[in-house]
Image (cartoon, rainbow, N blue to C red; front, top):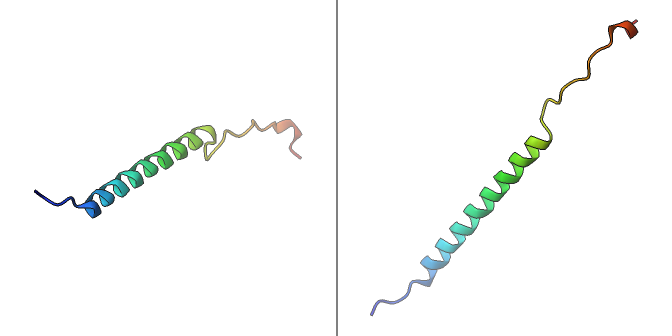
Length: 51
C-alpha cells in the first residue's frame, strides 16, 4: 500500500487557499474602483463668477 504524502496535500491546500484569497482581494479592489473612480466627474465651471 502507498504511503500518504501529507506534505503534498498540505502544499496543495495552501496553494488553493492563496488563490482563493487573491481572487477575493481582486474582487474587493474591483468593487472599490466601481464605487470610487479615479477621475470623478468635475462640477461644471461657472464662467460668470471667474475674475
